[in-house]
Image 1 (cartoon, rainbow, N blue to C red):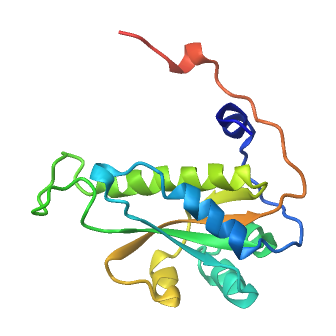
Image 2: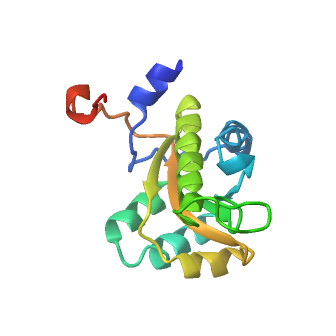
Length: 180
């Protein structure tokens, strides 16, 4: 699969086959994901993959703020990746002062780049993903025992799709592109 195919064929997937993802495949996905760009190459993204069924279901039932659609997506998935990031690095100088007027918002930007890279890498291995942003970050942080210098950015449900859906309608370049 080339980059164009990967970009045009990646979809949010919410229904999965009841098949586990081999941890070696997940490791390969993270191997590719680590090449995501980040502020001054700080590489702040961290990946905690939950493939234990009981823990995954607890995250699904208690970690998505009662949003049943997300609960169903996670319980159907073979695994859920918790994408977190180290705080205090992106958008800053070595002495900790902010370089950018966006201040610490750049951390979430870097986490977003890492998440998209993770999802594209997963697609390369035939693994479907769904990025979930409505969650109880404090519960997830505590449940996983993440260090205080990490912050949860999102969840990524993952598994082998029941089917690959076609692309929804997209805006034409003329609608979203301008030159000056």
